[in-house]
Each structure stands twice: as structure tokens, then as C-alpha cells.
Image 1 (tube, rainbow, N blue to C red):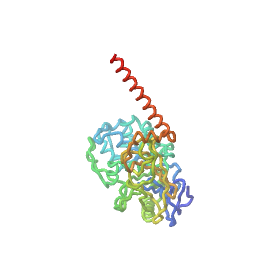
Image 2 (cartoon, rainbow, N blue to C red; image 1 turned 60 degrees about the vertical axis):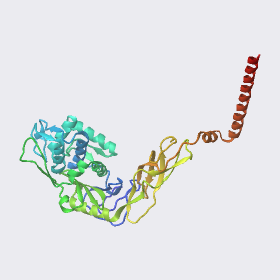
Image 3 (cartoon, rainbow, N blue to C red; image 1 turned 180 degrees about the vertical axis):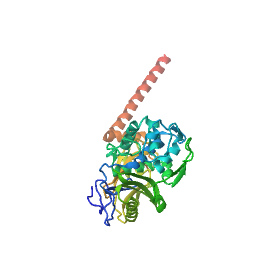
Length: 400
């Protein structure tokens, strides 16, 4: 749902957002608050309108660098390096830099020339790299994203929505190398040239103002305005904020974080030892087996709401005994009171033995079991009499 005015709490049942009283002001035209543990949108403002992301683009560039290059892999600055405008680490053509050091330069100093070097190294050109960016965004679940360069310099074809930026940031924060870099105020890198320029200082001023903030990336161009994708962890819980085109991104971010941690909380609704239902099994000594989540399931919700969760089991096709405790059974769909859905792997909460063959036979033949048993016994008696007669006949012949 979109909000035409800054002072609003925007929420959507379809999107699974939390609806709460207690409005707050932000100057940004677009924004999102995302719960990191669940991926649930807690608050949103015009979250699905594509906009210029400026250097928050580099979150995706950095994630692809982590996924596609080894930390000590050498990246050589291409011949056109010095033609890249904007913020720079002052790379020189042919300069050799390790991937881990370029990661720091891209995320802290927001080096456009470093992002270009990564794109050429991994894909051959900025445009080919942008294809990789769009493929990765689609895999994450982004629906309003079209990357056209690796750095975020203004381009009419280069846009991302606030919601999609939140999804991208959440995915990137799964990588320890990414989390470590964005939490630093400064990093000293190694490089083969320009040795007097080795300290990469973060442009994220929020890191110095709030010790709970542990990332992520600032961005600015005249068309995009001031942009920020942030992360903060309080009491072991992480929240991700996205701010696009803001007149005061630091104050916007402060209000968004304070609201999120004051008004919402995580509540565990099921754990690995919690039976959430039973799943049908073929050939077991019982017809079903108890199912439990593979890992704890939490809901992000308004504080004190304690809304019940609805659970739907989605087992794998035709499970067969025997089954051991801990075996994967399929998935469970957990839906919270706001309509937000999580899919969680479910495992067997107990052992299930294979049914004994006579019991299985009786179950398979149903009401015909007594007659079949009688027929089996009768058949055996007939065969036994025939065998005895043949034996007597042979003995009689030998006796003659």
C-alpha cells in the first residue's frame, strides 16, 4: 500500500505488514522496515515504486563478488578504469587488487572504479554484469528491479524499489564477509599501485552515532537524492531499513529503528521439539508420524499481540516406512495474523518402524483376510496330502 503523505504507518495484510498505532515522520519519499529473521515487512511507504538507488546498488555488486570470486583472487583494473566518474579509490589501469580488498573499497568508500573492475573481471563488461545482477535479484524474489550498471551512477534504466532493496540487503547480510566489512568504520587494504591511498573510510555516519547499527550502505546522486540501506541489531534481533530520496536520512533511520524495536518483537511459535501435526506414511506400524519444525519458527508481530499461527503441512510425495527421527518429511506453511507466510522444513519427531508383513498383508486385503487365510491353510493341506500320496506310491513301487 502506498502512502501519499510522510506522516503515516503504512501496512498491507497481503504483504504481511504489521499494523500499529503511533505514527512517525520520515522525510524520505520511499522506505521499508524489514525484519531480518523472517523477511517480513514491518512498515512501508511507497515500497514498490522503482526509483534510482544510487550507490546502494553496490550491495548487489558486493554480494556477487563474494559469491563468484575467492577472497584472495586477484582482480586487475581494466584499461578504462580512470574514465569511471564519481566516488573513487583511484585505481590505475593494470593495478592488481585482491577481491577482499575491493569488497572493502566498494562498500566503505563506495568506489565506482572498484565496482567497474569487479564487473569486468566477473562478466567482461558492466552491461553483462548487470545481467548477472538482475538474475540474482529475480532469484531472491525482487519484482521491481532493473540493474543497468554495477555502481549506481545515474541511469534512466537503472531502478530498484525500496522493498527489493530490503530483500537484497537481507540476502547479502547472510554472508559473514559482507557483515564484517559493512560494520567497520575504516579498513586498510593492500594494493599494487597508489600505495599512499590504502585507508577505506566508511561513508555511513550512523555507525559513529549508534553502536547498535552494523551496516550497510549509503548512496547519493542528484536525481536519486540521499539513500540509505541500514542494519541494526538490538537484543540479538536485526532489523533492516531502506530509505530512498530523503531530506534527512540519519533522522529518518533513527525514527524507523526506534519504532521497529519499540513496537514489534519476535515470538517463537514452534521449535524443533514441537509437534505441529502428523504426516501420512505408507507401510508403517502406524498410519502417520509426528512432524516438527527443523529449526525454531518465529513471528515478527506487534508487542503483546500473541496472535495464533495457522499451520498447513506440505509433506513430500508418498513417504514410506521405516522413518527415523530427524528424517526430512517436507515443509510446513506458517501463516501469522497479518497474513505473512513462512515455509519451514519439517522432520520426523519420532521413529516409525516398517509394518510386519503379516499385518501389512491383512491391512491390504481387508475384509477378505479370513477367507484368504482359510484358503491358504486349505491349499497347504491339499498340497501336503498329495505329497504324502506320492511318497507312499514311490515306496510301494520300490518294495515290489
